[in-house]
Image 1 (tube, rainbow, N blue to C red):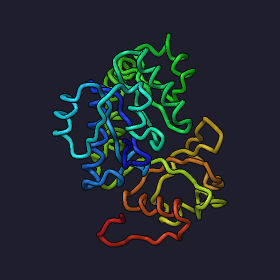
Image 2 (cartoon, one colour):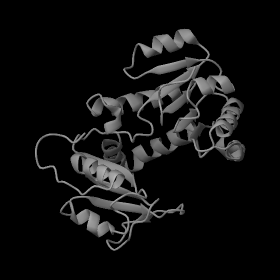
Image 3 (tube, rainbow, N blue to C red):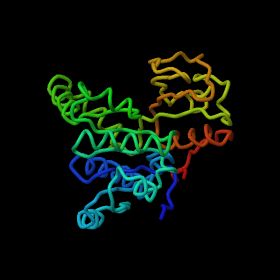
Image 4 (cartoon, helix red, strand yellow):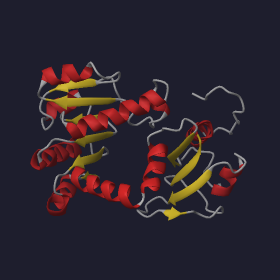
Length: 264
């Protein structure tokens, strides 16, 4: 039995790491007025949790509004197929065991070559290469991230607070967002300066990553021309960014929203 979802996320295992992932996704849904897709791109607005313990899954589902689950072993082909692996946008192999997460990564990549895999690795220094070979896009170590966060809180606390407010949507009116140029977008062939001028330069173009490159151009020049596959990071008003998303996605002219209503 498959899932009705498409472009969703699959979370493997119930533990502290996966609960943090769920909390973050649910929080983004709440700040969007109950609609996660307002704060999460179409890929990732829904999620499914996979675990062997049905009792824990049922109990956890009572705490969250958008919680869906599948009972079973996340490394099993049929279980992942029940979670819609072939239609999923991304998967989190987030179990406590490195070997299990590597095997889930390998299985997920085999079943869906296009899926984005962000895996938990307890020792990325020594085992990170194996995750990459299995097909992981990114490996995250809670211990490593926690250590960096503790140092940052001590030496640059205001920078950390500022980024938290942007990324965790504590501000309802300001957002830091990444946007991608599609082949049908009206932005193709235009420059960052032209895009910004449509919003009276209220949008701040923070960084640009050209298609095929792994490096970001920080504080890109206004004359930078946009091509399909390019990704840029923008800081601006939440309504303006929603309008810009529609413009980039649907090849439609920008219509400024000057009223109090929100753009869906």
